Length: 148
Length: 185
Image 1 (spheres, chains in turn yellow, purple):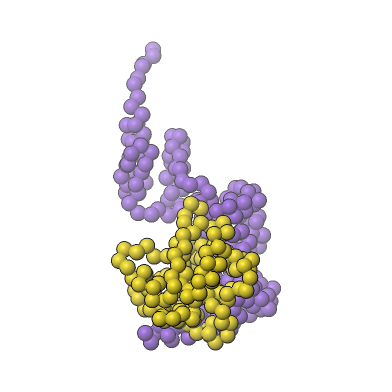
Image 2: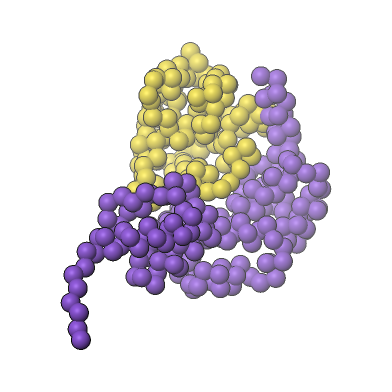
């Protein structure tokens, strides 16, 4: 069962953040295939392609040009084809208000961008493990809410 | 006297499978050797019955044994959390008795296949049940804590916060907002 490869998508406008994230995810036991997007619109265009294999988890930065994370989240949740995607918000904001708002809009996981690489790897691993449990077990997806 | 016979193994097996499965009222088609396609998903009990009735002929149902074991462990956890009476014994004892394997063995199989441990999965599942009770019933946190065998509300809140990163009240607030948001759209 561990031969399964998880498709993961990350939309983040910061090149360094994207690079660090790819490095972090490569160092984890869980096998993944990561797709990177420079901003929200690029991600949404990809998700709306016909016959696209949807990722099992999408990481969204909140502050991005052209289309920000909140807009993507709302579009995903209002699109019948995409509404069941698991969405993790990946942001530097740690205001309780921002966090509760994104959850109310349908985010499953809220991750604060850690400020060092070791921590980043731990956090990404934790998110992937949680996501794995929700994909393979009888857990209620309606209440899939975690702040990490 | 001695009779000499010639067997057609394939036919013997197919005939036997046909008779047994028909007697059990399972709708199926036989595929290539050793492959039976069942039209719908069978319950665990039904599979158990089929399995027992075939074993004595030397036919065993094969599955990915590790994945099957993990599923059985998860199902046992669900049962254990649903039924307060079962919790008179420790989970490790309950599981080992039920699945007839030692707990350390089961624990290893589980960890190797799920990226988590039985203990962590139970916590995740317990919190999941707590979330469900908060959303679907009017039970107070004290009552939920009691129902799930937490020693106190503080213990439940602590574990909830540690697991989900949210306090139970923040969680309830979010779920309430979430429902209004979805109802509006």
